[in-house]
Image 1 (cartoon, rainbow, N blue to C red):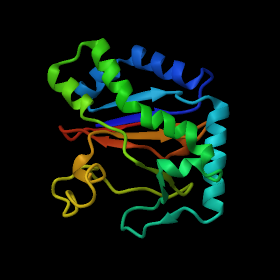
Image 2 (image 1 turned 45 degrees about the vertical axis):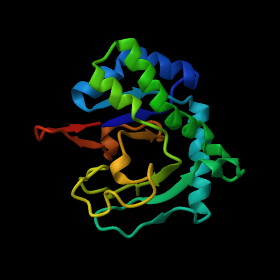
Image 3 (image 1 turned 135 degrees about the horizontal axis):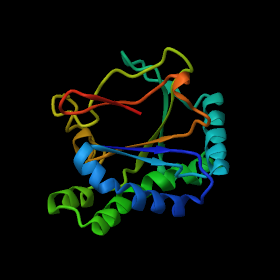
Image 4 (image 1 turned 90 degrees about the vertical axis):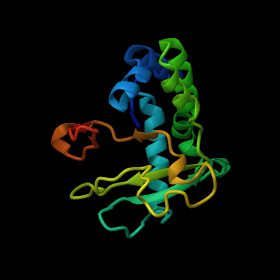
Amino acid sequence: RVGVLRAPAHMPCAALLLASLAALSPTQRLARDGFAVFDGVLSREQTAAVRETAEALRSGGAMRNLGQDGRDDEVLTVDLGMLRDPSYSGLMDAARVLAGMPGMLVESGRRDECAAETAAQFASASTPRLLMLARYPPSAGGYVPHLDNDAADPDHQRGPVGLRACDRVYTCILYLQSGWSEADDGRLRLHRPRGRAERG
């Protein structure tokens, strides 16, 4: 299941996220479609500050390519405790949005009076201690189709409880670019169970 979060917008983050939840009924969309999009979860100023921090970290050599076939991004794994460091504190607004998603889903599920099975799945989600910051090259970059929780992956149950691939319930992606249009290319493709790809 995927929550796609896009920034920026003009409303304050918390108010806008709550408004988006109410308007889009994401619990129903997640249950029905397997994904939901939340537009404008950060203000323009917040987005610019997060992006500036991310660029500074990249320029300082903190982000690196993992050397995995079919994956062109540079990444940095961020422990939430690192946000106390001034070098990382500019990521705080983005981290708050991502960390707040499990609670928002549970609350939205209550409001929507969703099915017991869906409510239980929402309630099983918790905030991971680690978040990933990623940057793709401006052209010809990508990531091969994959599952974030793939039972066929040999490492599916490897690692500390709560951080294993098998512990993943939802994937939340927060996009920080501004002024994107389809002409710029660079899209998230969601392959749905019936084989139809959803572009966003």
